[in-house]
Image (cartoon, rainbow, N blue to C red; front, side, top):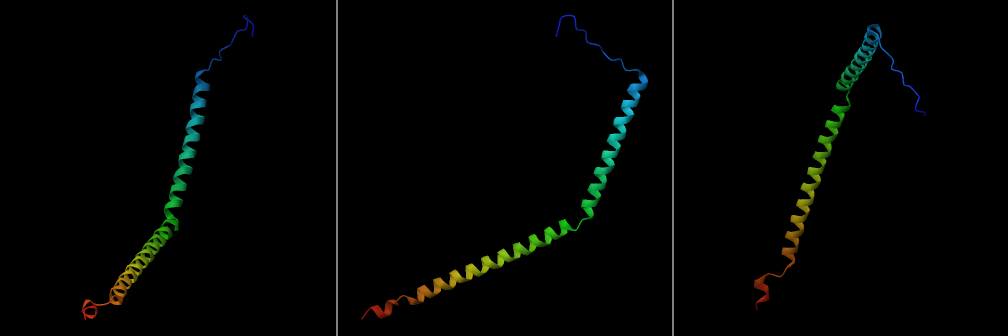
Amino acid sequence: MSKHTKFRRHKMGGHDAEGLKNFWEKVIREQTKQREGEESRLSKSALNKLRQEWTLRLEGQARQVQAHTKTQKEQMTLLSIEGLPSPDKTVA
């Protein structure tokens, strides 16, 4: 750019500033209304309830599997102890 280039400032009159303010306030109101509607829709959705139910079911199944595994380990321990020769039979 040359040294002689001048930049102009656009002056905004009171009416223009007020119009711009009104425009953005309207945009903000519409976005707020849309966000609140989306939040309301999500709160009424059955998805959260279904997720909670599935979480409870999975936790219950996990507890059952752990209890079954624990029972099997205890039974295996008892069987291995019973399979060992008793001290009375070895002394002769």
